[in-house]
Structure formats: C-alpha cells, structure tokens
Amino acid sequence: MHVAVDDVELYADIRGEGEAVILLHGFPLTHRIWDSTAQSLARDYRVVAPDLRGMGASGCSVGPYLMEQLAGDIAALLDALGIERATIVGHSLGGYVALAFARMYDERVARLALVTSRLAADTPEIARTRRELAVRIEAENSLYAVLETMLPRSFAPESPGALIETARAIALENSPAGLAAILRGMAMRDDAHDIAGDLSMPVLAVAGAGDRVVPLDEARAVVESFPNAELVVLERAGHLPMLEDPAGLERALRSLLAR
Image (cartoon, rainbow, N blue to C red; front, side):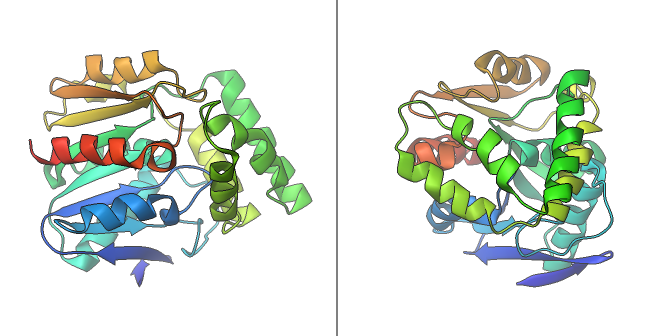
C-alpha cells in the first residue's frame, strides 16, 4: 500500500498481525529483498517493509536524503498505520536509518537489529566515492555503475551466482535520481558510536562471516557500543544474509523478538 508521508508517498508491504516489526532495506535495493524474511515472520508478527524515500515504489523528492529525514518518514509511516512502538530491523543503509530513528524516537523502539550495518560515518575517501558515484549515475541516467561496482562484492565468494541476479533484478526497480539522493545522504551521515551508549533497548548485530562490505570487526564495534547488545555471525553469509542464509537470519531475529 501507499501512505502519504510529508511531501512523498511511501510504499509499504504489510503482512500478518500482532507486534510490529519494521524491516528497512539496504542500498541499492527495495523492500523486496526482505520477501522471505517478511513471509516467515508474518506468521507471528505484523511485518511492515517499506521502500525508503526515492527507492522502489516510493516517491522521490529533491535530495540529498539525510538519514534523519528517512527516519522521520518511517515515524510518519508508523503514525499512519497506528503503530506506537515496534522492533526496528535495518540492513546496511537501513541500519543507518534505524540508528537515526532510535536516536530521534527511542521510546518507539522496542528492539533494534542492525544487519550487516555499521556505526561509523564514512571516511572522507568513501564519502567522496559516494558523491562521485551519484554524479556518474545521474550523468549516465543509468544504474549500471552501481550494479557493477556494488552488487558482486555484496555476496560471500561461495554464494551462488543466481543470488546476484536476484539482487540485480530488485535493484533495477530503483531510479538513478533516487539512488543519487540516497548516496549523497549516506555520505553526510554522522558517526553513531556516541549515541549508542544512551540506547538501552535490546540490540542485535547480525554479521556475515563472508561480508566484504562491512567487516566483522565493525559488527563487534556495534556490540561493544550498546549496553544491551548481542552479536550473531552467520557463517554462510556475506552482506546480504536475507538471501544467502534466510533461515539463519530468521533464527537470529526471532531470538531478539523473544527478548
């Protein structure tokens, strides 16, 4: 369904009934990356998987999209759905949005899961690379640069090639303008280590042993920074455990939801 949020409409896939679980996708993907996880969790929970502003079936506005703006969109979406409090699950970019949401609306976060995500801001070099990539995809009006540079290294080396094609098909649901606005917003985000110590809700960090995007030591930094956090390492996964090890990810999330 589409929900009017500020100056755009957000698309959200909504399934099941019960306690709310919000699934925030990563870059350059859409809510569909969560299909398997959402279907499984919806047996016991109300699962909401939105497309972030400018991505998938959600509307675009003038960028850049700061993480705080995206978090505000999620708060407005929850208001529209009558959800006061929820477990927030964020993958990669979605983790950055989840952290901003937890900082801004901590009373609305029952639990927090960061899936192959990090607390650190971009280094100057990475921020510059993101900005250059944004310029390139706008100039080419094409997602080619994103698909060729990011998706292959998002998987563990032993992951089947068919998974890359699945992720590619999902990524192609995005527009160059939306991804450029997201890239610039990610490059501008703040470091979150300092705020983590003030957040007392149960936190889960999920890492892929074969993740070549967010190294395992960054997942350990998540656990060390929060007062009430646990780490789960999925041995058969890289940066996209919802595709590479969906059963392992579901077990980890259900363990968090039981806390």
